[in-house]
Length: 353
Image (cartoon, rainbow, N blue to C red; front, side, top):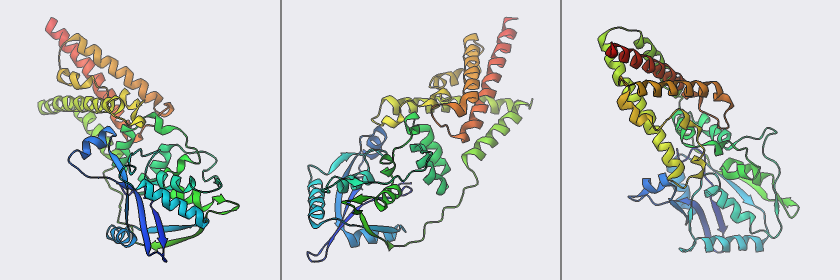
């Protein structure tokens, strides 16, 4: 997953001085509190410096290719960039708060070059007429790598801010787009890039399309549950009772996670998440009452039913692009919440009689 979107580093080579270094802004420490910091958005990345041969060896082991752009600047500008990199690499300066969209290993590498030229770097437009959103660009890579489950997780966790259209400069948070931007850029009336060459060409790891995609898995689940709902056997009712509890409990857990990512972390892109309309945190509690005979339980599932109906109708018109693989889950919520609102009502009437 971490290599899906590529990577950008800065190579500084001076044969006369025996220098061949790679400055890498994508380094982090995998410590005991890694997952806690990563989830909360507090994981610090840092600039590391390594010998190019070590960098090359690592990429060969990982079967990752390397393309190199040779930057065409004056000797004074190159020295200025090298000095800025060395200053960034100092212990007091090397750490930064990583942001996947706006402050990552690629944006830092691009900025260190652009900010240290004597005249401004002029970029050509690298985007189509219909500007993509951040989510569109991310989907481009996930679809190419057949990473549909990762795509689903990203679409659930990241909110409406991911659906803002990108500017030409913002698109360069991805390595391929920075490469395109630099290829067409001009500084002091001459191309910024003198040459582009392949340093290492490795076969891409096999990435076959999985049979059990989210769409297929959730569609099968929907069909099985609908079919079982019409079976009168005791075992089928028992299975549905267990399913209803687990289903709504997991929906509630998902909602609780989305609330935590919105209010409990520094990930601003997790805010304004419309997935909370189907992942209701209240379901975490209501799962324990799915087959209660209380009238308030019936009313709760009536509200869930109509809320989810409204979500299904407006699904393609929301300010946030929803993952279509979730649509069978939406239909399942509608079907089971309708069923639960009816069965609790009937059960209440029988008790009253």
